[in-house]
Image (cartoon, rainbow, N blue to C red; front, side):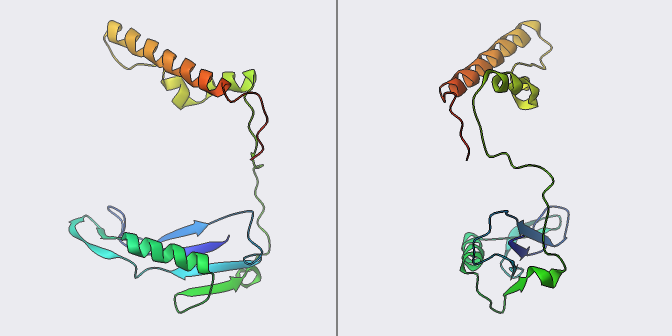
Length: 161
């Protein structure tokens, strides 16, 4: 965990719960190694003109910029505290899934596209009209082929980042 940012409450429709942004990485900068930054941004909001249930606050652009700059500065203040990992009672986080930082266009990976529901749904239609259904499915298959063709232009080089 690199940083934890406390945001204002009442940001979301039908809930007044507090919201936090967790910034996680497995490649901390040397300055941040072994440390966690806590930022209190609960006061960084403006009221909405028209309320939406419990949604009463928004975060304006200038406050977003201020929060980002506070995160980047990595210095303590009345709204920012920096703690060592040991202060939280842990020293290491184990990520259970392996990182996937490479990509290569291969025939196997192109065929694997069909296992992704978004790709598969391109060639499906929910229309009851047979003619419309056939037209939508044909158009979807054309889109699938165009995607595969675009991926083939990348070549079969191995990209590791």
